[in-house]
Length: 460
Image (tube, rainbow, N blue to C red; front, side, top):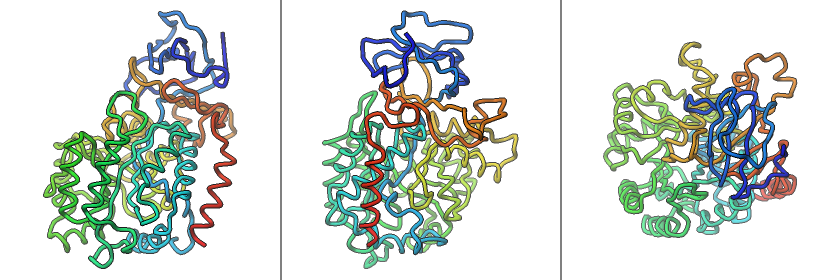
């Protein structure tokens, strides 16, 4: 029986064949030319060219007009920033003054605002084919001390897989940091809540929908002691570590002035140069530092759009990969992107890397890999990010029936080069969550209207 996504809700007893895709990217060179078979929320079989499933199937989905990808994985975001996109006072500024302009606004965040921002950002990402999102939330003003709880609840209403990082800031302006005092907490309060959210929400098992990591905001917003204690706490509980690093030369100069160390040397001094760590941006590393990152198997989240908006520079993706570091993609905050669209970020990644490398050194396949298996490696997931037997059935299908694709001869290349911007169908763990470019279980118009209201309240 051939069914549409809205007719085929996931049922653990049913077997579904995603049949004859127009093109497919598996992220692992396996042959799935004739689609794949799904059962119990996982990929049961890849169907090679000219083959049919080796098992009986209950239903089929005709993918002959679709490009099939693993669900895209966003490894660095700040969902609350969807409330301050294109904010006039912050336009055309470098990173530090940009932050100093926005921190006082963000300090006024209320629970209902964060909930609205999380829902809108996750929905926007899912509509772009993104099935897993790592969000770096580090703002905990007095009104928002249970921010992670709010985000987990909001995410459950959208259906994405999420990795919420319990961020932190403990160095306010009074201590020489950038953030206002109203947004910082003491080390003791931070560590206590870090342990609480790990114990409450973190799912360590395969197929997890909610995971937690610990993520001091940056070297210029937390104490050295907090960096060390956070690392010890994360390893005690088996969760990952995340922070911003080497985003701008200003940050390098700050670290040299404050610690007498370059950012990576500082990172190593607090026991963070390791394979359970991933870093946002990672732009301004020298040759020797790239090799050290590779030897440590540290992850780097490349954020091309944000790096362009803030004129931060271009990540050394190819050198990092060659050295052994994992490289993934992130859209970064929606106040420095200013959108939450993963398939567009894939195109941006390819384009900006063509400014650092030659045209025959970077292809659309590299950018797609970073957004899928590369990103999964960055956040320590082995059950998502590729189309392979036993992996979670997280899929994004893109329809090329738009003027922008007319005349394209390679569907997979066209997806990136011609600028795809939205997925037609999206599945997470065997559940269809997007059908015909519309959310199935959420009212996007209602989410958007509430979000706009919250954005106006925040800046009023």
